[in-house]
Image 1 (cartoon, one colour):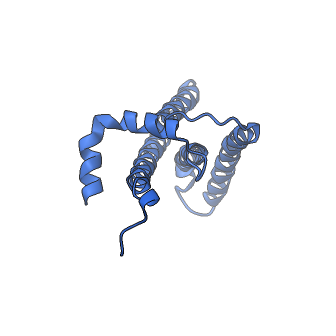
Image 2 (cartoon, rainbow, N blue to C red):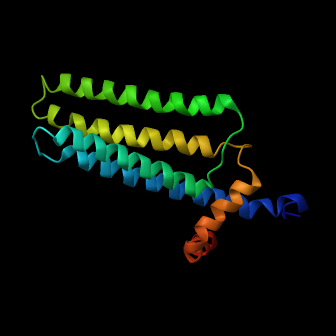
Length: 169
């Protein structure tokens, strides 16, 4: 009597797999955001250092975009508006990171040493926000198709033992 209906049975393991992939993606995004935060905290100054930092930040974000795409199977939307929405979300992340940097620098006028963390917090926020926007682009309820889920599962087969252990818990 408490068993799920017949059409629901095959869906439940897929939903568990999707939730597990989503959990892994969020964990990976946090790891990249912490890496960007550490990149902003390093106290090295010079003429070429800002250029190198921004180049490293762009590289970290591009690697994160590639990894998130691999986790979700590189789903490409056929709707122009969803692609425009992703681009606008990335611009929103950039604008908010600059605003956060300005606010923390202004806070540094009243709180000692707060302005020294402004760059690090802005880098971390930028990376976290881009990762979350991208993850929401790839996984939206009703949009993820079977082929993308198959590619995502194929990418995750390398760690299949970990998946099985977490599913059995």
